[in-house]
Amino acid sequence: MDLPICVVVPHMKSRAWFFERYTLPSIRANNPSRIIIEEGAGGACEKRNAGAAKASQPFIIFVDDDTVLGGDCLSKMHAMLEWDISAGYAYSGYTAVVWPGVRHPMNGNYTIGSRVFDAEALRRENYVDTTSLMRTVLFPGFDPKFERLQDWDLWLTMLGQGIHGRFIADQLFMKFNIDEGISVKIPREGAESILKKKHRLSW
Image (cartoon, rainbow, N blue to C red; front, side):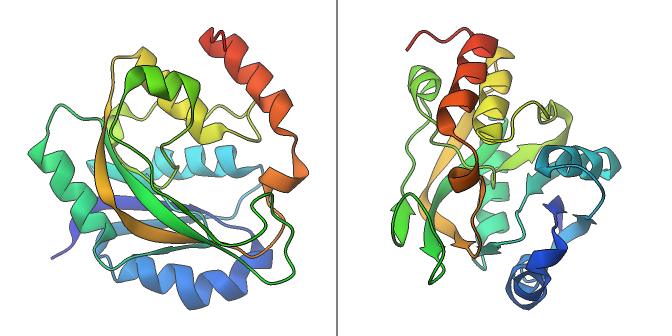
């Protein structure tokens, strides 16, 4: 049975070979009610927001076109939000693979374990990935000013609205760094400066 979830994918044509062979089949295997692939103009924030505007399912998740979902990713996240009706989103850890020859700050494959939700910790570090299942009515939109740390800004915005997340202690998806992404192209310092000013952070 299909899950009441809309999956929004901000897609770049340069990643079509990977998306069609790996990402899209993994999404379909999770049985969401709807998949929206956004290829329009603009960056990732604009594409995600455009896709979200078309969503009518109770739950929404944003999956990048270089991500591969585990077979029970969406069902586990959905079950968590059904169990804890006070949580606005469910998130997990993940494994990242750096494609041979691709520059990346981590210099190799790595694992992000994440952690149990803690508001003060979230103000200090970004431990919730974009690939997290949200209640659609609570999604405030991505801020296009952020070319980097877009997900952290989103979770801090929701935190300011009194919305918290629920952690799933598992690695529910994999991210494949198949090209040089924003972590290489855009300096972190500039994005952090905008983030600190917007959310009045003092670290």
